[in-house]
Length: 283
Image: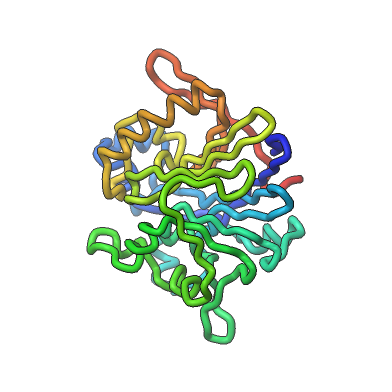
């Protein structure tokens, strides 16, 4: 899709499953299962969507999925699926790892930064050798010292090799990192998660990331139990969802397996969505 001189493409690192109760917090199962039917282990199917952006002659990758550094037990727990993973999709688009200029991690949970690194001859190295990896400084600091509550979400193999290679670009607040690519700190899910606003040609797209992971999470109280600061999430949903709807921005959903992009409309105090078909990886 084009936004003036900026272009972006939707990719996915496949799908995985997480507990439905955890994904919807205090919302009772009879309500959420209508929108996200669970399997026999109470898990719902989620996508791991990424964006490839072309801005001012640079290739920018937002999110790197779950990667491939998983053992059999972990694969069973998360039920990873998808034959064509992120690196193959980039290759099909004609983009090699060494051509990526920026890798943006909205935060460092395992399903957002897995392909940050890869294992070569038993050693972990950055997948994108010439890229600057962008994250909020506070997010990296927390990832290295997580709490008992969220330790399972952070896998050091995904971010410590990037630090060792000296490839981190650490932000402290909102920042435009390339023409038309703005990162906005939106706490709630974590203290320093950042959403992404893409602008150009009078058009705007806004990636909600885990503030609103799927279209099922559009109602304000539908907040994940994974969020460290749920009341802050609530405040930011009340701030950003109306803006996206009122301004006619394209909403991007990082984990929705069926509707990765949509326009929002407010009707009788509720937000509805109109899906927009984005060809995955298409030019």
